[in-house]
Every structure is written in structure tokens, then in C-alpha cells.
Amino acid sequence: MAPPETGTDKTAHVRRQLLAWYEANKRDLPWRRSRDSYAIWVSEIMLQQTRVAVVIERYQAFLSRFPTIAALAAAPEQDVLALWSGLGYYRRARMLHKAAQFVVNHREGKLPATAAELRLLPGIGTYTAAAIASIAHDERVAVVDGNVERVLCRLQGWEAAGTSGAALRRKVEDAANELVDPEGPGDFNQAMMELGAMVCLPRNPQCLVCPVASGCVTQGEHKTQPRPRMLSREIGCALVLRSAPGRGNGHREVLLEQRPDSNTVMPGLWQLPALRDAAVPEAELQMTVRHAIMQVNYYVRVRLVVESDLDTLTVRDGRRCWISLRRAGDMALTGLTRKVLSRSRLLPAQPEAIALQATADVP
Ligand code: SF4
Image (cartoon, rainbow, N blue to C red; front, top):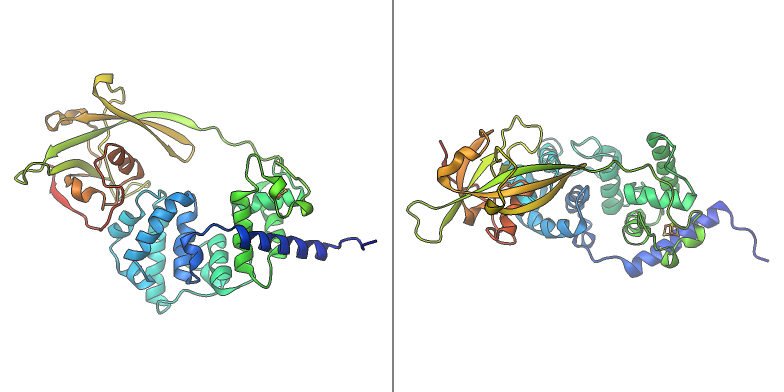
């Protein structure tokens, strides 16, 4: 008869099974081809709160424009925001930029190698520090994101409902640090995240094909805290177009407004002007776009407004400019504005270069 499995045997078994599965099944994602700590840092910041498919599109363009920490540190903030456009949560881009400047000015342009030192940089928290240190430098430190937390709770049979968030978090972090493979912590961390993203899904986990099912207490969904309900709001925005003065046929401009730097949300970004009244008559409705921010679904009614009818717009909150449609895609647009312009087929699919081209301020 085989001896009963000890905790150490079980841990080793889970590691082996997980790493073998990851080696055979991992997605070929661009940031997985690099061990460069700067490239890993950029990808980890982008992946927070943004879907992988969107990050794939933006990651390569960002690294082509800013291939090194020095290049990022030297760039104007508007260029960094423009490359971030579509990823949302622009504070991440600002913090990344600031941290790059800090590294250039105070650390001779070199990112620290340990999680403890990385955490001292602006915008780098426990999760990002652990990801960079383990993937780029093989430090034995666990990465715990939402996916990993879910996998560990299910493996251990822990329920989130009724437990304080902080207490559960501590338990999960301790378990993760015990489980992380000392031989290949970077691969192990990525394998845990991949399992959570591809197999141990929030709804309908794929337990029948799960490589660690034999070590899992829950084998299915666990009780979680009830999710906050999404709210709905209706707003209106204006698409104002004109032919560019003196530039010939087919050269059009769009009216955009820059959010003031004093705004706490998306300061400095460019957006379509808001309408005074979201109740757009059907005959003048260009489209309705759903745009989710945090817990709110915005249903945005887009109205085509002629240049002579600007009193339908709200009093402007910031600088307003006519922007060439050939250049608009290169600017730091809000996600909603990029969405509306793309769906109206006024933007090319991918911005290519960075240039802030305000042809003229609107008085
Ligand atoms: Fe998740 Fe099911 Fe695997 Fe357990 S067996 S880790 S619940 S997918």
C-alpha cells in the first residue's frame, strides 16, 4: 500500500502537475518572450484591469515608441497618454512615466532586482513587484492577483463569503508563498495566473481538464462575496465635424475638448464635447454606445452637431480645438472618444505616430 501523501508531497505534486500543464498549454503572449524587467513591468501595469486582447494590441506599439526606461522617462506625458489610449485607467500610465523618471534620475536608469526594492518605486505595488522580481530575476516570491486568489481558495476549500477581505488576503498570500516553486518561481507564478484565466474560471471552472484537480478541495465554484450591481446612466456627446479651412476636399476636422489638469478623472485627455441634453431626438441620433467605467454602464447618445449649432454643447470645461481627423488617432483620447470615432469610421484602426496636432484653439 502506498504511504499517505504528506503536505510536502501534495505541494510538490501540485507544482509538478501545474508546471507540466503550463509548459504544454500556455498562450504565446508577447511579454512571455522576454525576461527584460522593463518589458515585464510595462506588461504587468497594462494587464491590471485591462483585457489581454486589448493589451496585446497596445503593448507592442508602446514598446516600439518607448523601447527603454530612458526613452519613456524622456517622453512628454501627452505622448505617454496617447500610447495608453484605449487601455483606460490613465493614472497607471502617469505613474509608470513618473517611476521611469525616478529610475533614471535616482537609480542610474536601472530597475531594482528585488521585490522589496521595486515596491519603493511610485506605482509599483506588491503584485507588480513580485511579478517583475520572480519573472525577470527568479526571486522566490508569489504573485497574487484575482485569478490566483480564486484558484488558491478553491484548492484549499476556503470561502470568501463571510470572511473579512484582509484576513482572507493574508491567508491566501501565505499559502501562495508556500506553494511557489523555488526552482522556477517566474514560470510557476505565470502558470497559476494562466490556470485562473483559462481553466479555473469564475463561473463554470473546467475541473474535468484541470491539472491540479486531484489536490483541489472545492472542485467547482466556491462561495464569494456578492458582486456590487452595475448602475446605468445616460449621457450625450457631440460629434462636430467640419472641412479643414483652406486644406481642400476630404480633409476634415473634429471638435475635441481637453479635460483640465485639475480634473481628478482623466486629466489632460481629449474628449468629444458633452451635450447639454442627453435626450437626443431619434432623427439626430448618430449612435448609442455603451461604455463601462467602474460600476457604471454609461449609455452614450451621440449626436451629429453642425458647427453653427454649438450652443447644444455644455459650457466647455477645458480647452476646445479643431483637430485634424488624420491626427486625432495619435492623441491622448479618452477611451469613449476613441470608441465613438472608431465606430463612426473616422479613425484608422491603429494610431501610428504620436503628435499633438491642435490646428487652432476655438475661442
Ligand atoms: Fe479550479 Fe476545478 Fe481545478 Fe479546483 S479542480 S482548481 S475548482 S478548475
